[in-house]
Amino acid sequence: MLDQKFICANVDLVKEAARNKGVDVDIDRIVELDGMVRSLVTATEGLRHEKKSMAKQFSSASEDERKELQSRSKSLSTDISENEAQLRTWQGELRELLLITPNIPSEEAPIGPDADANEVVKTVGEKTQFDFDPLDHVDLLEKNDWVDFKGAAATAGSRTYCLKGDLVMLEMALMRFALDRLIKEGFKPITVPPYAREHAFVGTGHFPLHTEEAFKLVDDDFYMIGTSEVVLNNLHAGDILKDSDLPILYAGYSNCYRREAGSGGRDVRGLLRVHHFQKVEQYVICRNDPEESRKWHDTLLGISESLLSALELPYQIVACSTGDMGLGKIRMHDVETWVPSLDTYRETHSCSTLHDWQSRRTNTRYRDGDKKINFVHTLNNTAIATPRVFAPLLEIHQRKDGRFNVPKALRPYLGDRDIL
Image (cartoon, rainbow, N blue to C red; front, side, top):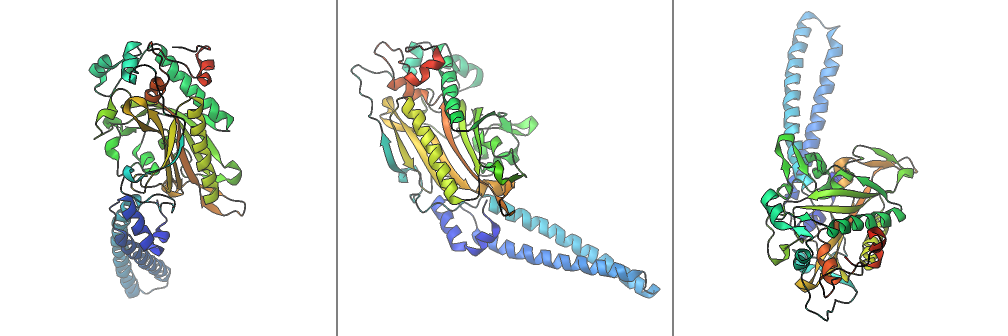
């Protein structure tokens, strides 16, 4: 979340950010509550000081004076209790507003209400041309007996699936391929639980506005994660890290779950938008330095590009608009991969810079070389996510006979097979 002092000192800027991100939050009320809380804290401290001073007078006071002191002390205790109750109410309201106050987007971000305002900044690779009638990924899956949609749906509902045969091995190959690439870049591989407590989702900024997107385990008060970022961002909550600890680079591998509430249309066919998936996530914790954050943003984006290039997939990079980038993000780029059957690019990666917006929520800090304590910066980006990537991968590398040409980069993970 934003620093409270920053909000009060930059009201117009924060209001503009809220407008541009389409967030309904009362910034004036934040400023009002800030002043009310500070005034009441000061008044309450004055009452405590008076009560403490009276306690010192008690031993030397006469009997009549003691009665007066006792009466006054009781009155002060009541006033202090009432002030503390009021403070809790105001501070609770203030925190609720701060949690939905958006970060200030970069001046580079396109201004617009939704994805229609996004801007393509780079296109790589030629759209695939076929000399035969190509199949879409669902037909390819069924032709090769690589998936069971019907049995999965009967067991677990819509938007579920069971991968079968060589596709299971292909998924594992993709995960290992992405992890090996990140390890070469200095990232530490890490697995995480597939669920977390509510405060972890608040820490990333997924909550409180988007609770409907997560599956909840009601009896245990957990939510299923939609990205390992939820856990990785909370691993160092409350810590004061050493300057020498940074940057921390995690390659998070996890099962992920999303309700996909409200989504629909042709693009949900097959494996494009499902409730459960596998993902390797790039996650960075670095120093509180905008230039260092920019460097890591470009690095994360470059790694995703290198993975798609190695998989021989055409893609484009999109600068996300203010209304599409989400509450806490300063910069966001989507990487979209070409899907022949849809005749369009579909998002497969999402790269985000958040500065200290998440670390203020989790109280994650570090002590710099001057012994000053700062909040860290955080960034994240997809490395690979399945099964969504199967749509472009299978369709682009399909053969006339319906089999799959394995990209060279994946062959070492599949026993050097070149065809599945």
